[in-house]
Image (cartoon, rainbow, N blue to C red; front, side, top):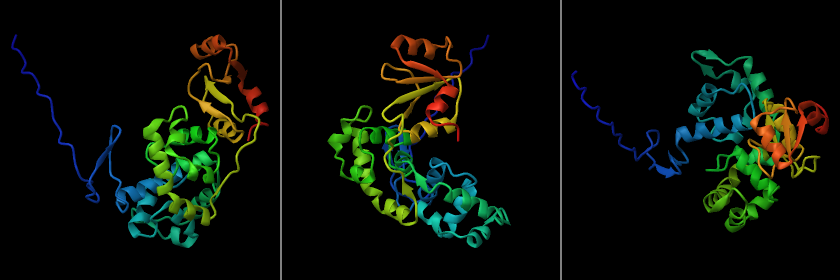
Length: 271
């Protein structure tokens, strides 16, 4: 039997410059990123991130890229300065957006009031996701004013943060002040700190997924967790008598288990 020659491993040269704007790249954790402020890819990416993270529908990548290519839209705040006629005239693959423009703008303006962690998590601060922003909010930094005044040492002391993320947050929120002010000036607002029935409570769902319940829990002051731990307050199960791994673990920790209907009752009913 003829031995097969061993395949040599392939090696790739790590790029040093952004292919879009030639800005020098740098590692952030395991990712190689460009932070060029005028980079076309960064501009479009920031706007795509904003509409996705705040939950606006109908704004696909193509329309955002087309608006960025014209120079009409440079930041997420610029989206709120568009009108029906302007948006309907944008061409995608030779066809104008047309009547879809009104639907798109209605969806955009339907998300004008945002929870603070959603607002901050959509700004594109390195290492600060929506869930990480929620952790910071739950630690007491529940207004933009408090976030502006937070120090690296204070944020680093929040469980789950640490020095690297604290530095990213404190520096990042300062870097985003101009964008934040522009968004607020265009009518986007941040909801007042929650005093809802689940304030300070942590909840995990098992056996089902319900984005509407997630939003309702957060609006009521709760935090949605992906796993069960000793610190969890409530496990919402499709079947409260379930013998799943999460249910067994919750019972072992003495965590309260309730059904979907009971959670909706606690939240004041389904939306």
